[in-house]
Amino acid sequence: MEKEMPPMPESVDVTRDYYDSGDADEFYFRIWGGEDIHVGMYQSEEESIFDASRRTVETMAKHISHIPKGSRVLDVGAGYGGAARFLAREFDFHVTCLNLSTVQNRRNREMNREAGLEDRIEVVDGNFEELPFADESFALIWCQDSILHSSRKKRVFEEINRVMKPGAEFIFTDPMQQPGADPVLLEPVLRRIHLESMGSIEQYRQFADELGWKTVNIEPGPECLVQHYSSVLKNLEGREGSLGGSISPTYIENMKNGLRHWITAGGRGVLDWGILHFQKP
Ligand SMILES: C[S@@+](CC[C@H](N)C(=O)[O-])C[C@H]1O[C@@H](n2cnc3c(N)ncnc32)[C@H](O)[C@@H]1O
Image 1 (tube, rainbow, N blue to C red):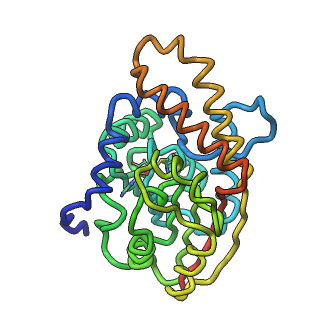
Image 2: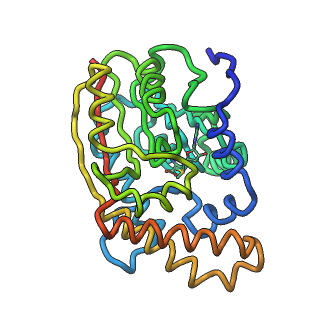
Image 3: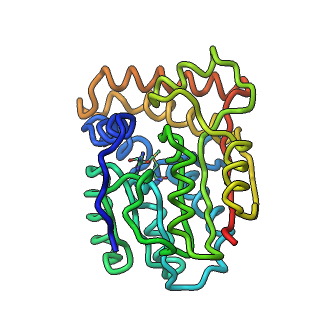
């Protein structure tokens, strides 16, 4: 059922090299939480990155709990597979994790083995702009904070639409920009992810309309992004002395600067984040 992958565009190579680097892997695995590497939904400033990030997964899961047990689910840009393990465990779904980063995929497979979930989670190396799956394969597409990396976001939506069964649902989160965002504040944010622009709720809603999808729910939460990046920065600053040189000083400095730009831009209303939920007819 898998099809051969065409050559990847340059921006995809840049993203893969970034996530596959030892520095990024150590940072996301040790500081960002290791299971879930997306924006968390905090109940207090003191809450751990892990707990807040897990709340995002649980909040999204409440919207899709009616999907029958045993359904085939695709997690697009699956990171270390935290959400996939949650979905396989809680709903008995058969989850396919699609991710560009072979380093993250290795850790994902290892954690699935340790959790005894190997039979319910498959991890596939690949690019979400060219999904290596047959048409109409999945009942649910799940995606957290991954589409921002694409310079061909419409293409990602078209691919997702292609592999959705009729009636399938697509639920995702993404860091986005607000309409009319100040380009001066946006520039250093975009530099960190090597892109010219981010998506927006408006743009994603338009893609969904063009594909004939129904909007099930849109839950904006831009404050979550600022809170999360502030928490990651605080953790990094507090723990950098104990990392024992496993992450290079240059990477740490660049990351701290990058996070500060995101916090400033988010605090000034330039950025957005939210949970978006659509259904294919
Ligand atoms: C911020 S992480 C989020 C990971 C995961 N969804 C989570 O919430 O824990 C972004 C993920 O998108 C993946 N990614 C970025 N571009 C991709 C592409 N073109 N194809 C597949 N995966 C991609 C990265 O490898 C990384 O795992």
